[in-house]
Structure formats: structure tokens, C-alpha cells
Image 1 (tube, rainbow, N blue to C red):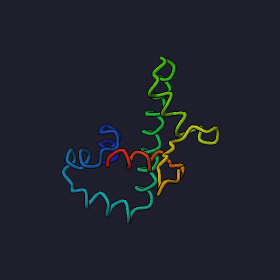
Image 2 (spheres, helix red, strand yellow):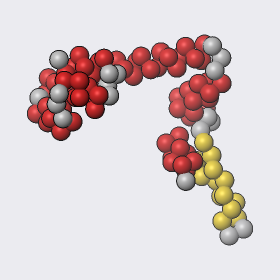
Image 3 (tube, rainbow, N blue to C red):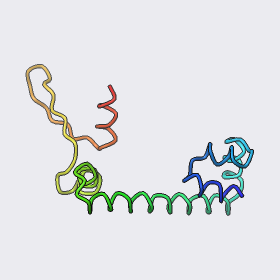
Amino acid sequence: MLLKALKKERMNITSACESVGISRETFYAYQREDKEFRKRVDELREANIDWVESKLMNNIDKGSERSIEFFLRTQAKHRGYYEKVIQELEGQLIQINLTQEQADLLNKI
């Protein structure tokens, strides 16, 4: 029942737990203690990621510049598609290459 709720709620743990009447703490206890449950949750998570990736690729097929840019920044770093930050430090220029996660954190400041 809980696994079906997780699938229906697209892996939103709070919503899935609420729909079956258990706490998040109980969910995490199941995950810690039951190897088969943990495996099934991991499979659902991977299926959800596959679904999201398919939506990303659909947007790329439609020419979404934001989706194309996201894909290149996350999957083509080896080709030079990554965030760069250039700052001046005591009159000298320095360049820092950041991962997308680091750049996102800086953008929040």
C-alpha cells in the first residue's frame, strides 16, 4: 500500500505517508530495517527519475532553450559547459570553476 502511494505521489514521501496514515519517521524506519522495502523504494525513485528525464528530453525536442542549457551544463561538462565565476581578489583576477550545485547555491545569496 505504501509503495503504491509513493508511486502515485511521485516519490513525495510526506504525501505518500499521509495518504496511508503513517508518519515520515515510520517510513524511514521501514527503509532502514527492511532491505526489500528499501530496494523497492530505490526502484521507484529510479523510475521517477527516468520519467522526469523523458520530460526533459521532450522539452529539448521542442526547442526549450532552458532545457537544452540545463542538459548541457549537467551532462556536457567535459565539453566546457559549466558555470564559471570570475572575481577580483586584491587587484588580481581569479577564475573559479563551479559545479551546477555550487553555482545554484551562490545564486541564492
